[in-house]
Image 1 (cartoon, rainbow, N blue to C red):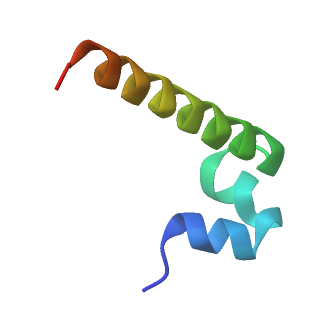
Image 2 (cartoon, rainbow, N blue to C red):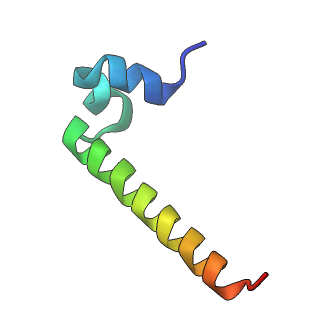
Length: 50
């Protein structure tokens, strides 16, 4: 079974039908989530001394 993310990558024009947002909005959302995740990881690494 193909994941929703993989399906959207393969068929970007279907994004609006699947998620209710444009492909550009979807990619912005994914990039924002990645950036947030990386920032949280950096904060955890800095606050947890080894």
